[in-house]
Image (cartoon, rainbow, N blue to C red; front, side):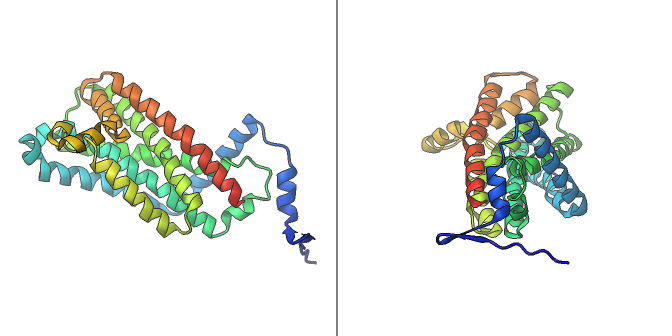
Length: 281
């Protein structure tokens, strides 16, 4: 026996019964929202296990970029590779976090194009759960990429003055920054028309924010107009904060500014992403 679902005409519109039930269901509580978000995070982890190719950028990019940038630019910028590593490693951490979190929006758009999110609209779940869940799962990817970057630096001669605690603090701040910046790309995933367009727009955002910062060269070596932009670039504050933690083990004002900037990004783009996603539901 098969059951068919018919839409009921209402004026010139057709009503989807499952969507109507979902909209009339009471809003989930905070605890229910958290449980639903963790369920979506578990779904994201299972996707990673079934598609290990998602870890290629996480595993290869830190090794490639750290070694390549160190040996190509080390002598030209700082005189030697060993002198350049304290400048480079925090910059590579920021760049890796940006690249990894960019994939969040692309994968979200792919799921929406495949109709996966159409199934969620009939469920009485919080609208933020399908967005925040995969981002929690991606924390593992940020952590792996950050640890591999530091490990590669150690292998080629980097010796962080901040010790173990400084390294842990720098990696933790990188993970937080990656998670907060991922909300920007999540919002792009909800408004773009295809995964390819999300990737293209994300690259246009990632490259200026990364390379027009103090990640790879000192800001005072740049032209005045470019130096002014570098100083207000949020990525520059994250890089400076990670440098203070890794190289000196110091919690400075830059760390506070970096955390504040991450909070502002989440406060702006998380509601935008949820609102845009809800409109498409």
